[in-house]
Length: 133
Image 1: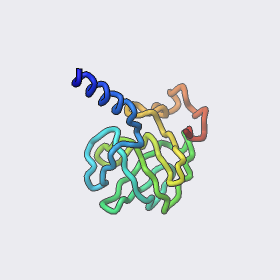
Image 2 (image 1 turned 30 degrees about the vertical axis):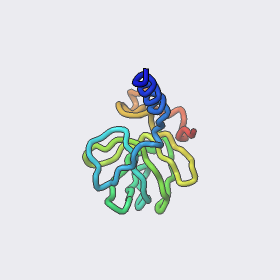
Image 3 (image 1 turned 135 degrees about the vertical axis):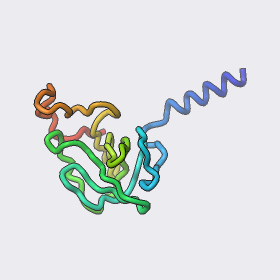
Image 4 (image 1 turned 90 degrees about the vertical axis):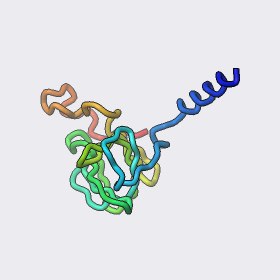
C-alpha cells in the first residue's frame, strides 16, 4: 500500500512538471538533446536567429523563418529558450522574455510547421505573429 501511494504521488508530481521547469543546461555543456532549456543574453540578432550567451559559451538559436513570424528580439535582451540542440545550433520551441512574455515557436520536436516551403498547406503563414500564452 505504501509503495502504491509513493508511485501515485511521484506520478502526480511528474505530471505537473511544465517545460518552463526543465533543468537549465550551460551552453558549454550542450549535446544533442531534446527538450532542454537554456538562458542567457542575446548578443546578436539576424532575422529570427540570434546568438545567446550564458557566460559559459555562446550558441546560435534558430527561431524559425521570418516569413512564418516576426519575433523582434533585441540585442541585450535576457531570454530563456526551450528546444533541442543539434550540433551547431539550438532549435527553439518556446522563448520566454524577462518580462514573462512567452513566444511559442512550434510545438516540439519533429518537422516544423513551416517546412516544405510552398508545398506546405500552411504557406504562407496564416498567423504572422507568434502565438502567446
